[in-house]
Image (cartoon, rainbow over all chains, first blue to last red; front, side, top):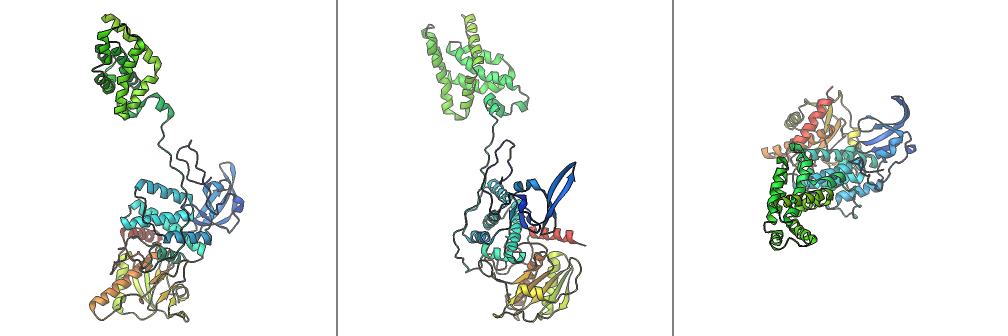
Length: 351
Length: 181
């Protein structure tokens, strides 16, 4: 149940091993127990009380934040979900100091990635995660000044870390901060011989940019934002098929008619479909179909189709970005057939 | 209000410079509130005084809500040893509370020349601003030019500034505004 909240409702929450001392049952919260509330700090459990909220009787765990005495109320059944944990033990604090003392000269330089990861670490709530944020941003601040947002994030993380270390070691926060900074910024000539730091906190993988499956299948032209321009996408979709139909027509010997057909089907469509059509025309400027026209009309149909397919595949190899465009119309077979049927009629008139 | 209390003798000129600097840094009235004796038995075996114990045992002065008290001593201070050793100590403060302590033992020697006196005064003011900053919930700062940068840091310039960086200044002003009674 640990980890940041899912960014999309249908996204599965990443299952990570819980942080050490994670409280999964509200029964552990006896009066006087000190716990760490992620992103809030150390709290003391005051007790469990029942409240009537909008007709529902809820059992709430009342806590008091030690720093300023603020009251925190958590529904008893939501305790496992919020990531409460026990105050860090001596072993964990040793790990934190070893981590802070370790050499670390490679901070994440991508602002977005860094900020996101640090936010995840703070939400996850582990004491080592706090140390990672402090160490990472401190190292970065040696290279360049921190932006205002990150300076604030650094201060928040430091505040939480200082208070937890203070509670865990049983010293005042001022002294705990001196201990932390002594390790983080040792005076000249001081070195620490420490064991290797603990393994870093696991963060959930980021979701990839989602594309709705329906949209992918339906129409790639939707990505161009033509709908926003007031252009009817259905017509554009037809237009995207037209070159194919035209290509078939050309393959059968009516190269001149294809252009007429394209223009005749609608102005808006012509704007959108022109590049595709032009490409096809360019590629078919020396169409094998015309050569065939000069030879014999009575050639087998499958051969002609193969000849028409060749020039269409060629641009897809040259420009991989447009490969989808070339492939998509081919999937819509019913429309293709109707266009293919129409073409011989026109060709027939010319005869 | 910031009240300065001396535990050992301090030159009036240094005291005047200190109160002026504190007023400039926090915008709060600062005054000398007299002297107090050093608690008996404060000195340890190594001749240093435990800063935490001293701050706990020193005689209090009369204060009002939101007053901060700065004790100035000349004895070298020590801190309890931490997980990876004992940090050097220029001063100590009860974070977010009302008492802080600075020592002149680690400051540059106050000689007879004007420049040495000025160096001493400036460093004393810097440590005092640092200690009072902790009382206003300021943490150590990553900016080496800020008065809240740790005093032992290798990045600290030879003659460190006694002013706060914009971030620490904003934060302290916010805290002071909220705390004003």
